[in-house]
Length: 184
Image 1 (cartoon, rainbow, N blue to C red):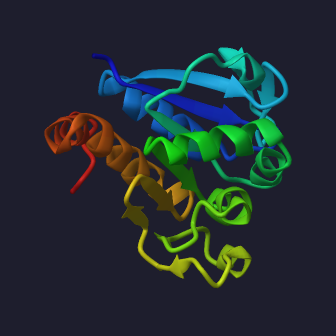
Image 2: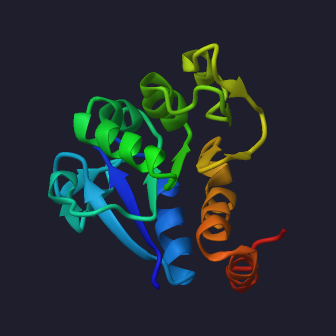
């Protein structure tokens, strides 16, 4: 059965943190859908427009993974969406993969309690937004149960490969890593 992932984009998203996971997951055979939090045309933090496949409000069913890119004000705009919070809570309750990078772990996941009792990382300095219930790590990519967090643009490929490993297995992640010439 084909695995599915949903990447949610909000105005001001960080380009590398969104596009790298989309690319890597598609190379691994994951069916990736890009959802706009509020619009189909979403402008990144550096004014690159990306056309989403759908609006988040039109999502039917539940993907195997949800991916939240960071960037500012992208992560803040994701955090303002009740639909994002609702989906992330449902995904977490169902044990589905919830992956967030850069500011998104601190700005989107922490305020809704997803990181309570979990080990997590984020963009350096954003950890001040973690509650005292989150175990902050300075690792580049952190997996704690069904939650994957990562630090920022420079860790986006490692983040994406970890999502592949969790969804499709380590062999598939290693295969994609090798074909993309990414050092282990």
